[in-house]
Image (cartoon, rainbow, N blue to C red; front, side, top):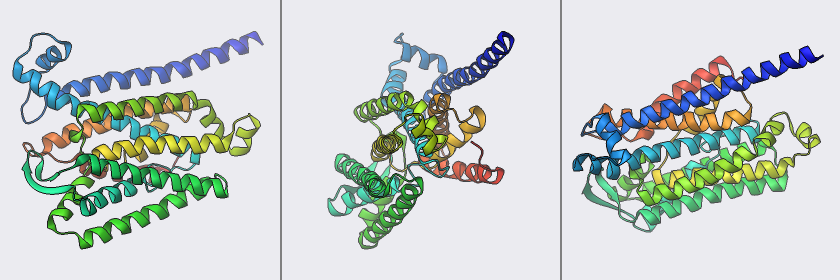
Length: 356
């Protein structure tokens, strides 16, 4: 008996050790990619100079200016947004018990795009002007961001409201999201049909997700919301494991399934809405990353959630770095690259078969 107990304890220690090692390795990879990303761009910087600037040692004024005013906010925005989007996707897939559950398949990004288009067309927040990012600028980014955020949360509220009226069924939530996505896409196309050249260009520009748009103040808001949501999700990891086993099993273990599902949806939607509102549409991160992590680390949410955050941050940061260099000195929006990368990866996952 004692021998069996010792063997099981040793197996569990190895189980936990493998997952902890993978998390630690992911953290090291993220730090290394961050240093490389800060050093690369239109003006290439030695990694040693970048490290000196970050640590507060004497570095060239030009290096400090580029690192602290341009590169570092962009790198941190990619890390925070990638982590938040991937975490939101992992939580939604868990509470919905559906591999297609993600912020983008539930219509939240489509609602944000409609909100931005509404701000550009009705409130005049897009103008034609010369800038470092192109010929189109958003003259009032706060109005555009605010409207995108409001419509994102509106879509989430409708999904949650429908689920409360009919019972929090995963199928009902996913189907509601698909219907809302179609509705907001039609609304955006309607606005684009009546838009003039400047308004149309501004609408299209906003839908290109770009982490380079984030200022320090926007990054602070995004970071606070993502960190708070991450703490909430990690504290509820055991509840999500129980829900994964089935509603009846979870209820038998004392989990209030409907409450866990609805609050998980609301908070994941909030994280997504803020990221999309500040940075634009960045697709596939929240859908693909949790699937990739499940194959590497398994479905235990105690490890799946932090691993999804790390992989989402790595994927978006690496994509942004490549997008910055691939057409240098021109800047390619990162959302274009994530779409090109995400679609074949997701199709490969489907072909191999979904395994939790």
